View 1 (cartoon, rainbow, N blue to C red):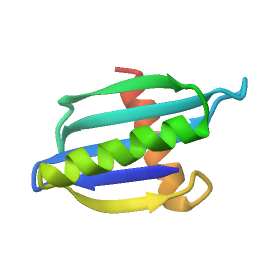
View 2 (view 1 turned 120 degrees about the vertical axis):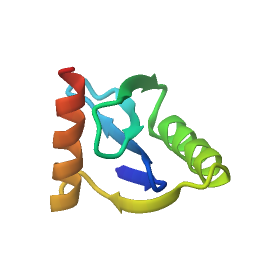
View 3 (view 1 turned 135 degrees about the vertical axis):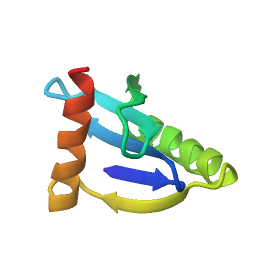
View 4 (view 1 turned 30 degrees about the vertical axis):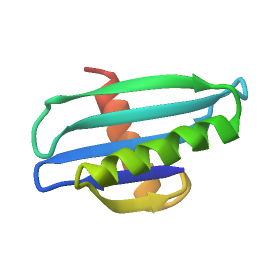
Length: 93
């Protein structure tokens, strides 16, 4: 699952997925739109429900800060693959 929120200047992108070992990973990228400022952090969740709990928390926090959801999709969609490729670029920085 991939979810992206934005304000006029900032973005947050979350990717909840399983790695090749079956572990659930919560990846969070954030930054300023149109710049390379930002970061990327990966967290290991106990299970899928734990990762989805973190996603619900993130949704609440970002809504309170004025972010609006602009994308919610799965990994297999065109938008999902594009979002994952952006995460891969951030990981290399």
